[in-house]
Length: 541
Image (tube, rainbow, N blue to C red; front, side, top):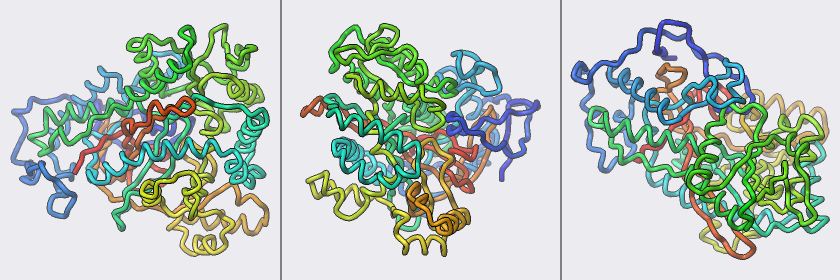
């Protein structure tokens, strides 16, 4: 494990990964070495320490053994990295690449209190352009698939029926869905802001889907900033690094989310109504959300409000015409940045709020149906033979979707359970949860499966099994709390998708930017729970 290089010789503070913004407590950083951190002018660099490979032609890069050294970021001159780190911290501070510092009281509730830069990679992550294009092309297909599946209430209820018996959270969501089916509640205006997450499997060189997120797909604001940061870094230091800023694709995720939300507001057709963000009581990642709110206000002249589920229960009411009013304000669009985890529902108050919103005429992002489509069990059901054909007609589209599916199985498949017990390192157990830190890996897979078998209950319905993906390892430099740290890392690419339709008219169906996350290779839980994951961007090869 490498040594972290920091701003001063005072004690450093550990900044947890983005999953901690969803109320997780990460482990501490490795032992750090801190020293006065001052940039030196470029003419003071010892350029002889730069490898010749760092000056390679980048016009037509592919990740082969002949040029992978170009992306061995650990070989760059120490002083050069110092300068880049300093300039990057300045850029992040001035442009709002920030989160709340949990060590500062009120930082998660009062804007402007206790700011610290978000964790990020110092340099962009190499990624094959062919697979990048593949992932981008899949976004509109997954958007359409989510919408089609959401309309099949019977499929959702039947697919999750066993899970409902053993998973209280999913059961409560299904109860709300059932009530909407009983009253024949129609969602004419349907808005989805999704993110499909992928890893590139090293052995097969295949792009494989990790999961599809249909609720609270975060970091649209901050991820676009990281792409800007890396383009800025390479425009200044690119010749010394042998890297071209033009190979970092522009990331318009924040603007695309704002466009989708504003168009949904327009379709609701009440100029006095507002967009309501549903948020957690304490939110360290509030600035990612505030970017969207500010853009909506300043660029689209749309008012937004922020409310917790408990506040909606206390202040909300359903008017006779179906309008949701909160503190007397009509709500046009409800954008959920909370409500994806049982922790967001500590009492019946939050569940009353969720039901109240679903009963209203407001556009929900997501609706209860869209939310359920994003469960792990539905992901596994869609991967079964002939299931996609139930929802899509185009054979080419179906083939493209199926190509990115990893192995997914229900635990009622005794053969696959036996294989997972024998070779647990090849599988991941996933519960019906969002937010990271919930998956089961390694020997714990065997232990959990054997425990479930011994119990002989239906608890296995709370999980699915997934093929474990082994992505390529790269040499990365991770920035957090003013320190840069060299380590070997793996990355996960998330592609945002925005979908809006009003009855039969599809108004928007786009690939809407991306999120790259990088974590140390020794970490399991997607880097999100381990404390070393950072925001990153793509360098096309």
